[in-house]
Image (tube, rainbow, N blue to C red; front, side):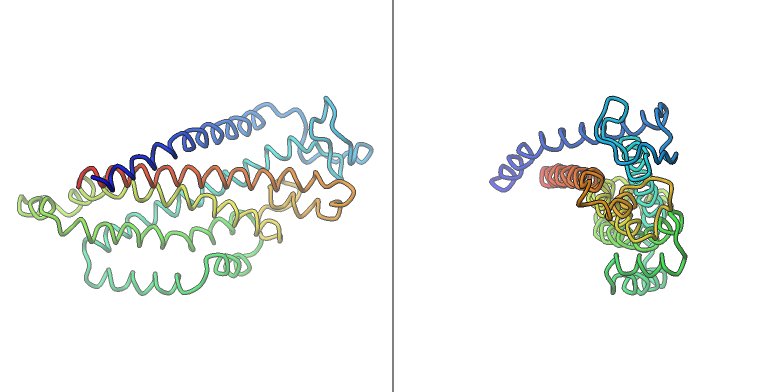
Length: 282
């Protein structure tokens, strides 16, 4: 009971942080969607006469080295960075969860083959593997997303597998087998609900890492290609102007930091939240 009390206090402490993080993320997404439907400036239109202008009513964050509106590019860059990060995460989940379920429940040859594949992927850091795959596939946001999916699906499959291995030994699964439920029904109705919390926690924490990875690889030219705006690419484009106009780098850099911190706060809250549920059940 003492351990449960401490855990409850921890969740109460983080609950307001989690709610604030969620509200901030929703506001950021709303601003990005607003920019998508109500563009006031063409983010790719070059106006050399208006380059490197300061803040004004027409350009709230000024213009960049090619006269493009910084605020518009920042918001549309968020669409690229956050949107493709979510896409990579969702595809990795779609691949990883079924693999983990089947491997953990069926075991045998399927499990052994999967574990050898997983060990091969986990032998190297995610970033290194993603860079190598992106280099082999060629520059472009589609190839970068594919590289991240190849890197990330294994971690979700391993998480699901370990949870299924633990749950499949419990009495309610044995009773379901005795009652003649098929393997697909057992996995769908009994095992899948038990992995949702674990997957949500890992996914929320992983989203920040994927955002950093996409931004980093776009910074070195392996992601979104010019003139399409993306936060990492915007950092690279504004690098030569850091001394004369540092805000061109500060804006996208700050956007990356804020979004990653918010996703980490959400992940911490979800982790504590689901840990409480687990201890209450026990």
